[in-house]
Image 1 (cartoon, rainbow, N blue to C red):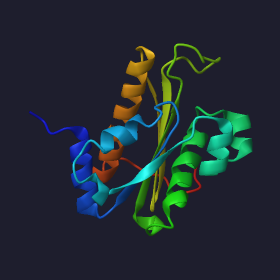
Image 2: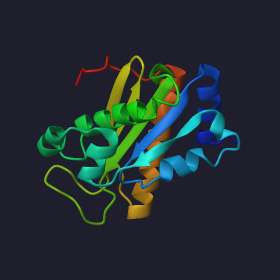
Image 3: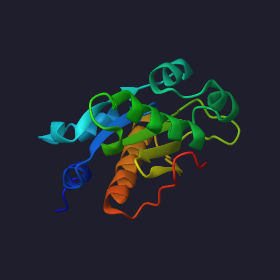
Image 4: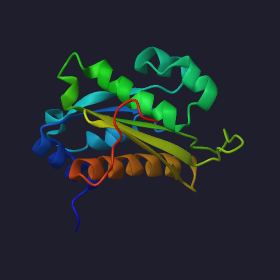
Length: 174
């Protein structure tokens, strides 16, 4: 039986001497919950910020109002700013270059769809010392299934980054 993804991530973070912080919107803390199911996670997981509203994304994560107005909360630009912002928010605890920030923003459903943004759309963003990454994914289930799908996509992306198979762009590139 394969080791749970959250346990694999923990071992990789420890091996690379990195700390994880998360910024969640549509998952409402589910990613943090899954990460903290692993005994000893306090060695590599500092915490997270659940920022559901535009106001919370701006106030707690430093997402620019212009980004939200132009692209919306469920966008590449927003999750990159969320991932960078959560790293900055926790940088007082440890050196920012040792932090990996993961962000999730999506439309869990059953409502909330917009033109070009269907229910199930989720954007995952990652920010680390060497750069950032973001991609969109599409869940096709109930609200709870879409939330679980989103958290799993975020963990898979994080694992790929930690294994060196996820290309990250230099900060500031979009």
